[in-house]
Structure formats: C-alpha cells, structure tokens
Image 1: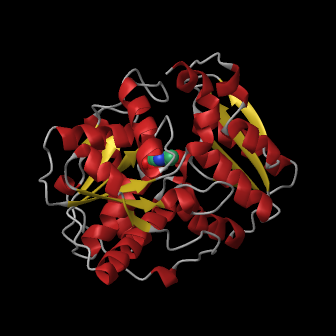
Image 2: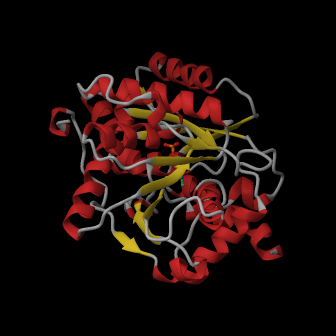
Length: 333
Ligand SMILES: *Cc1c(COP(=O)(O)O)cnc(C)c1O
C-alpha cells in the first residue's frame, strides 16, 4: 500500500494517541485495555470521519468542486466534521439530516451536533426516516448544477473506497505505534456503522499481514448485512490500493448484539459504558456509536471472550459532541 499515490489534504491531528486504560482494566479485572484516540483528530471536535475526509476533500478539490453535499442522521458526527472542513476550505456545505430515531426531544433535534452544524455555517435540511438519501442528495446536486455550481457528493459516513483509504492508513499508523512501543496487539475492537472504518482497517491490517483480529460492534444493521456491507467495501478498497483479494470474507467479523431498540436508541449497557469510561479514565464516549461499541467490548470481556493476559485495543471513533443531544437520558440515570 502506497498512500502517497492518492491525493490527500492534511488537516487531521495525527498520529492520534494510543493510551493504556489502567483503571478500567483493573475495574474489569481482565485483559490489558488500550484506547486509540481517534476522538482526538482535531476537526471541530474530531472523530473518525476526519481521516476519511482528508482523502475525500482532496478528491473534491481535484474535481473542481465549489460546494459539498452530504447526509446523516440528525445527530450525525460525519455531517459535523464535513461541515467543519468544508467551511475551512471555503466550500458551502449542504447536509440532509434523516430523522432516523423519531425522537421528539428538543435537545436531540437541535442541540449537540445539530447546533454545531449550524454554528459551522452548514445549510441543514431535515428529512423524514426512510427517505432515499442518495436520491435526495442527487436532487440538491442537480439544482446546484442548474445554478452553475459544481457540487461534490460525499456518501453517508464518507464510506466509499476513497474515504476508507483513511482507515487503511490508520491501520499502518496503529501498527507503527504498537511496534515502537513494543505492544503486541491481540485484538482491535470498534463501533461499526456505515462500514468505511472497518473496511479500511481490515484492508490495512490484512495488506500488512499483521495478524490482528478486528471486531466491529454494530450499531444499526443485523450481523449478516453489516458483514456483507463491510466486506463489499473492503474488496473495493483493496482494489483501489492495488492489493486485490487481500481481505477474505472470514476476516470481516461484526457482533450486532448491542444495537438494542435501533440506531440511535439508548440502551442500558450504553449508559453504563458511557458513565464507566467517564468515571474511570475520564474519556467521553457517545450514545450512538462508541458507547454501544464499548458496551459490547465490556460485555465480551466480562463473559471471558478474551484471555486475561491479552492486550486489547478499543478504537475510540469520537462522537461526544452528541451527548448534549441526549441530555435527558443522562440526567434521568
Ligand atoms: C460514523 C461513526 C462510527 C462508525 O464508523 P463507520 O465508518 O460509519 O462504520 C463510529 N463512531 C462514531 C462516533 C461515528 O461518528
């Protein structure tokens, strides 16, 4: 893999820290727990979308784009990070926010990431659940083209092969850090949604023959669909990187037992995980992704899924900016 072949902008704060979690390890009485801090990528709050956007925005500028269109759920971290970099590059950003949860809470609908989108100068439109988001983005793009503009569409979560390059590269970054620290990583775990993070990571981990198993904790789709989505995108990412076929179907593993009532719907184990990480390691997770991912990670540790001497790394994908959108559930807790 040679990432310098691809156009890229450099605005993420990299490398992100790889830190031990001694207090959490002690509280859980189990394996050695580490955290890779991709919540610290630095773009108006940071998060995992920033690595993808370094490649996506470079592609947009190469194509002569003068505005960006993207989409996500109401409390999308992807939309916030896209709005931030678009603004920084003087590109207008149009975002469609899908009402995926049906929540009527005022905080959910206008606080957290929604508030930040507006402060960042993004044009936000809300659309009902189950809208055909790609068609809706194309409609806006056509209107803009009719007005003589050059829109660039970024898919939900920035999850296409260009965006996934950011996480294939993150696999290299993590390996380099671990090698320099003498840290043998036995498992890597993270929250998986629109699939770009897991697809990129597994491509990078496989192309380097790292032999580090990767586990995605699902936040929306059932296991079969999530794994199929990740595998399809990993195959396309490997093709783009000129390492075709490097990812095998069995390398793609998702555990989707921690979704609860649906995407963005709180669960008790998510609440426990968010409070526990805050009160042991002073690390802020989020209710939609990293909180449910950590809930799954904690449950698997408690079940003895990992052995006591192993080094486990949790990739923190960010999202704490959504916490104030969920104020009521944390106050009730
Ligand atoms: C988008 C997101 C994820 C999931 O990443 P995908 O690449 O969409 O699978 C995980 N955590 C947070 C905080 C996110 O915003």
